[in-house]
Length: 432
Image (cartoon, rainbow, N blue to C red; front, side):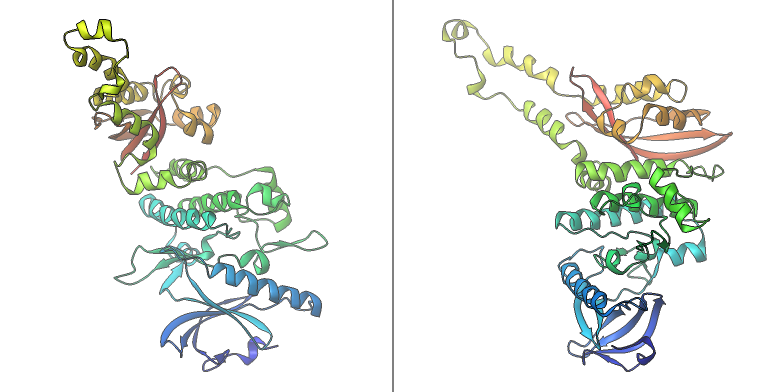
């Protein structure tokens, strides 16, 4: 078996990938910038080092598992996911050959630069969410979403580009695992509660970890903290004892709730919310309702007319009498604007009544108690002019939040739905 000490610049992995320089490293191995001498391109090559003292049988099983999961990860092709080009066995150790992105990990960015502006975090979250939707649709679970596995591009052409890495590998060989004695190695700070309780990692766990990653980018620490021993932290995660945001001086400090809601909606809507956020004003998030409203604006075809001929043929203008029956089903811009205005008129003083006007998506990600606590923190909330379009349940407006005599102005997109009785409800409220 090849040992890390035997590997260095000039070493050829599988006789093809020439190592140039080491770009990252840790207890699980090193990542090298290498040259694929067959295709003449730069790649990133990672040696997965097996734990010291592992039995030959366990080592063989681990190698086989890594090779298998590497091949699975190689199926993922997405602009916001690092591609796995190859997985090879060299000297008895599995090696992963991946796309090379000139970048720093999000963990390195936070360590060097501190917490990030909310707009940048929202852009990071949107790109990662897009990648996870595609990954989960392919039946693959990442299982180790965290700042260390998020790469932030550097350079003029790569500025703002974000990609997630280590797909499908980290669960088998990563930082967080339980030993047979129940002790923990690594940090469980980004685990979801169900995984911390011993359940099998799944797509929902990825989404939770994404939310924890975005929380960390805004707050500087994971939602369950980063201090204390690992076992104690694992218990906190399993019990859901997360830390609230601790940066009230930042006018954007409420954003972790908004981002967490966005991530939760992503699971429920299969990425529709991110598409609506990315294509501002497209109405994607309210597609089913909007489509129905749009079709009713067309002139009713002859087949819609009632079949009774005696009375209808004596009615002078059948088309004119039918038109008003369709109009109430078409939501108007005035109705949408009035609802949003009335909804925000209740805030922040009467969040209990406002919660009664929310739709299933918003209620699915925030309980009544959390919703009330969130709004009660503001001294005043001022809604600007609402922009809406006839036949669409999506609107936008400027919202000014006043907290401790300081103002924060944001542009928001609202998505409404119709309740069972036909009344409008606020289903999503997302800062742009």
